[in-house]
Image (cartoon, rainbow, N blue to C red; front, side):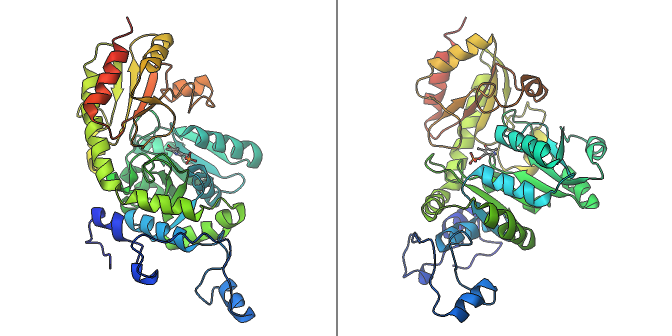
Length: 396
Ligand SMILES: *Cc1c(COP(=O)(O)O)cnc(C)c1O
């Protein structure tokens, strides 16, 4: 089926990137479980290596099942081209390394995924690529933090795990003037809720492990952007560092994507209900959820997101020990990192995902010892609330 810009998202997640006619009319895409592809002659092999002839060569360079996923993701993010990786971090590191070299500078949103923080630290130590954290809230603040060496602005919005938002329009307008590449980690929002490339950002990265796969059974990553930029990443950081996705994992993601829109609606609607319930609970000190009218970022949410997303962070009113007690009392909600699964998952950033971040930096990022992050699952929200309530009521 031909997809154009009028085809709706809910249809594209199912049909785009795949034509059964090219695969023996198979409704579900085949898994091309092969490492290499055969050439009929030296000339044909040479032609493929030279890029003069279409066709596959070797699965680290491209694989037909993986290509279906890549085309679908490019379509959904309104980008020209996508690349799939063996993990979100493989995608994050490939995107950052392809846009920087020694002595360059990265301007980064204050608050990022814990391993992205670890990566920035490693790049600084080993390759002298510097970074600065900024809240990126005002034009003045953004400009003040841009250096002559800045080649990349790296953003998470909503920020993990504080759920603060960054105005993508504001950042890209400044970055464009200065020729700086803007990379957005769109893991929390997915293209269903937010499309940074349509706002003018240059690259989108995903941990496809989360909502894209949506079933907690695969670790994967994706990069989407302009043809030229993405091809550069394909030929350099992806091909030579080698963090490619397996055909079977690509197939799981293609299958997961088909229900992305309906899953996201349910995640978001339940999160809205739970955020409201939490707001009025006496044992809760603060709730951070961009979909709530009371939140300071609500206007930005309405501008750049369809809904508030499926993640809620909140602070327990009490000590660290009280926080531990609440989490350990939960029964339906599972204690686990990761997010975007059918199962509701809760984690404690200070001792789990952001434990690698020094406590002083954590505090600067507003990650307290009482902060919890809830990934609202697909269960009935009333049951999720009943579990939270019984656990919260247990502390004095
Ligand atoms: C999980 C996650 C990553 C890393 O992805 P992996 O698939 O675990 O490698 C990066 N960014 C965000 C926002 C994440 O949630």
